[in-house]
Image (cartoon, rainbow, N blue to C red):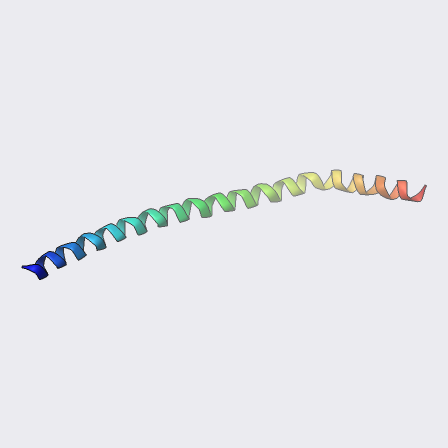
Length: 66
C-alpha cells in the first residue's frame, strides 16, 4: 500500500517536472529568438551608422590638423 502511494507521488512529481521542462524549453526558444532579433537589429544599426561615423572621424582628423 505504501509503495503504491510512493509510486503515485513519484509519477506526479515526474509529470510536474516534465511540464516545468516544457515551459522552460518554450522560454528558452523565445529568448533565443529575441536574442537573434536583437543581434540583427544591432547589425542593421551599425551599418546605418557607418556613414555618420566616417564623417565624424573625418571631422576629428581635420580638427586635429589645425
